[in-house]
Amino acid sequence: MPPLPEPRPRQLSLGPLETEILEILWQLGSASVKEIHDQILADPNRELAYASVTTVLRRLTQKGWLTCDKTDRAFRWRPLVSPEETQILQAHERLQRFLAISNPDLVAAFADALDGASASKLEAIAQRLKAVRQAREEG
Image 1 (cartoon, rainbow, N blue to C red):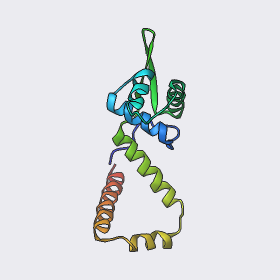
Image 2: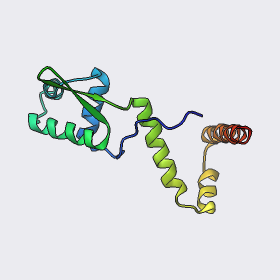
Image 3: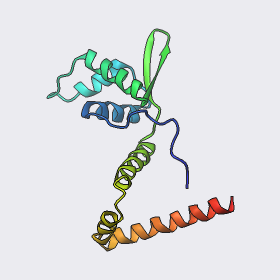
């Protein structure tokens, strides 16, 4: 099983505008504030100040989602984490919160309520965990 992606954002929670801007950057690869602002304003029903985009980009950088490169006099922002890595990190965080409950009866009740498709996914996960444990014991 691959390790969790690195680098990891310091804060995984994202607001709606942060998520929208991150998705734009995933689509474009990298972009200037103007390019992101223009893309958001392509929707005629949207209003958003240029400064708001800049603020959100700085916030995403502080959280560890983006980096900013200066080329000539222009700043270009790019994501440090891919959409796939984001899914892995968010799933890991949700699982850790679920397991933090530390009540085996609650976890068992959850597993008991799974439908057939979910139960087969759970079985596949159990098999992966078994393989990981065996690899650790052998290594």
